[in-house]
Length: 502
Image 1 (cartoon, rainbow, N blue to C red):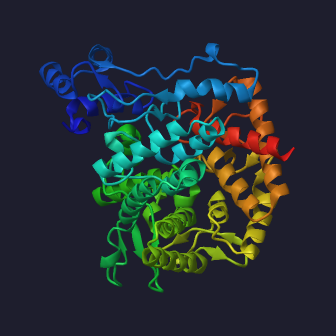
Image 2 (spheres, helix red, strand yellow):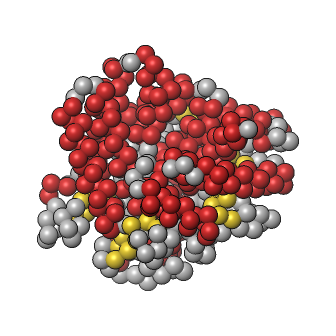
């Protein structure tokens, strides 16, 4: 049954039985959601303590705590090694909750995030590769491929309420990692053919509707025909309803809006969740007002860079399989995309990549760490990389690493926060263009901040205040989470890179 539309679900979420709305969205019913809802119809509606007692009597909740007593809290390196087993989950047997069960093992980020997340898993994989755990990386990739076949896309995470949106397309990065680390050496073309099939399916998902674009209908789902006829992509979600896992927040924020405005608001919010940057001034017309969100009007430079990488990876894999015509065709599409990125997202005067707003027909004014992704995927010219490097080192580099944007807002993907995946995009991108000393400076700032905060927090966290190291990161809809998958993975890789350079 679709439990999110049930009276029980709405009553619990709107009564704020739990401080975090995601808690009840992830609850495991003792029997089934249907039986719990049917019982509630007999005894409800309930309020206050009676409602809470009903919930606690009919549902179980995952333990989100991390057993700090069993972990080494004197060494960041050892803590990361000790933590992996606690973030590891076996293939799912739970068929009653909101989970979309996975057939293979996986790693969760930690805290409130007790399911696999799509783009998180690539950064987590860096740390797993460092300890030689290719098996878990492959298991997660197999889960994504299976989810894609079952769901039509790789969802944000394996929850039914995430099924209508994806996340930044990193499957190509994970498959390339596995090919280079494991399968290339034995020339396993069967594995490669299966990888190509999975990448083709993801590409079709992102490009769905591109053949129906016209001057009258320039945007369909995730594809947009630009004024020069080039096709670029945006984040999108087919649903125009509140997010079940943030029901009370979305309904509260949409108060006072017309029905049409509410639907637009919900869709923009969901699209921002697909971006992984939930939420940021990148998506806001008024940087201080979440109600001004307009994500589907934004052509994000990082999304299109990752899709450029997907096209290039497909071209490379086709060539290895001897399919030259397919390799050439997708390479030509990658070239067209690169031209469009440079036309709409490159600002030669400022020396930065910026998102493009299709409502305003102009570039965004927000400078963000998305500008590092063209370097990460090799889409920048030497001159462009030089200019982006200047911007990153002069304005984005802070005592604790790279700040997410230059806008200070109440949103978590803005200043003063820094996030591990964005550090990796920049470090890898700068290194690829020969800016090794700059990459090392970012690594050293990040690791010194991690060491300092670890001494205080005795754990690793989802995000950090990289501007004021004595302060914990804030902003967003929930408290900062302990764990944390991608922080562990990127930090592990930075230690390795630093050790290798000595």
